[in-house]
Length: 150
Image 1 (tube, rainbow, N blue to C red):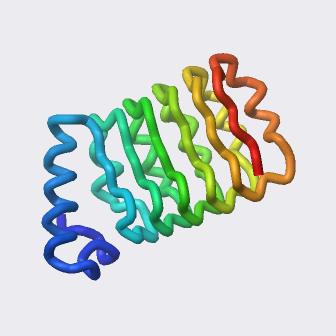
Image 2: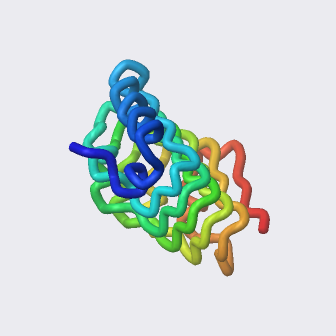
């Protein structure tokens, strides 16, 4: 499939780099799409079910698709510095996660399904719009580092 419009707008160098990163992710199980100005998660990313590490720092993501649940081998995910307003309930299916980083977004709440992420040891949801600590965090018994600062 062709790169998303957000990438195509950046020109041929960005398109080639994006395609190279998608291709290399097959070997490394890691995908880093930082600073591309993405407004949505590219459809093909949710089909990379072998990924263990997904980095989407410094984009303009407002939401994540329910298909994120296909990425159930993810160990680390980083959505730092985006515009996320909500996390879909399906995110709770990413049960291999040990590191979840979502600081500097616009999250007002977390879905209760976050409680299913029993392996999470590192959770950073600082600098969001959370009015209170979400109850579901109390179910994350493996937490070693929790950042809720504002």
